[in-house]
Image (spheres, one colour):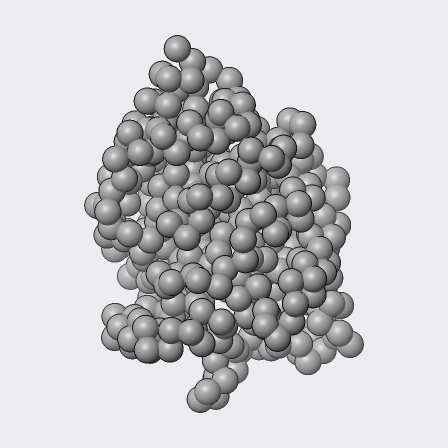
Length: 396
């Protein structure tokens, strides 16, 4: 894994806005309509090639494939790669995505938000509208063909663009098919362990292909909003600790310096007044066997938490990738603000231990974007320029 040895390197969280020509195929695939599979594969390959070249052009050092190969969302895509689940319609009033302390405090806001997003034909603010996923049989990995295509397309794009290193983002076990229902295994913990065992196939294949593995785990932090109250912080921390243990088991045998771990507070454009503070979970996050940790830092509810790193030290050899660009607003950050944010972390942790990133993905699913496509690229340009300004100050 590259480090910021001579300047601040830039990356992001992974998901980028899909181009219109690719969305045409994905819409048919999601809708169960016939489509030309060869044409889809060609379009996907060309789209990945273009998005990697464009990331390099705007100044991103470690790019992703944009998650273009995922036809659902960043977490629900696993429904197409794991056997053992079936989808069922969600009964009125039983949508698992529409609960939480934040929603209970601001019901009028969320009613308006959900109504507006439904009118635009996108997923709800808290997850992808795919119905309820129910485990009804043994879980096993069946997505080898899709994964191999993702890897091949991305490696070809990296080579064509002359990019040294790239990462593929996939879901951590706790975030695989969030709010799933278990009707097969004796306990939910057994179901989780089965998911982790199956997803190990994906994790191992990405690293064996020479790519960096990124594990997305929004559910780790978001669950606090849904659990406390009535549960306590101690109950929640036990829940997170259990999921960290399961994740680490799934990562056994994979070198830590080939793994990135991303934690955010759910990404949706809401108040977030009931988010768990970073200081209350940072010790658990750092127990994940990863070489880099990607954590929100531009979110106005969490930007002040850079001060956590004045007293919390990174384990030796690890990298922090704070978000210095927000994915949730169309306002483009000024490069000088970006440089200021980077500088805070670099002074606390050491310039070589910090890389500049984004808070979350710009598209939580193919049809669920947070900003306009043109603004996405303006934001990444601001990220790169801010990193250049910070590098000039830090290495002067």
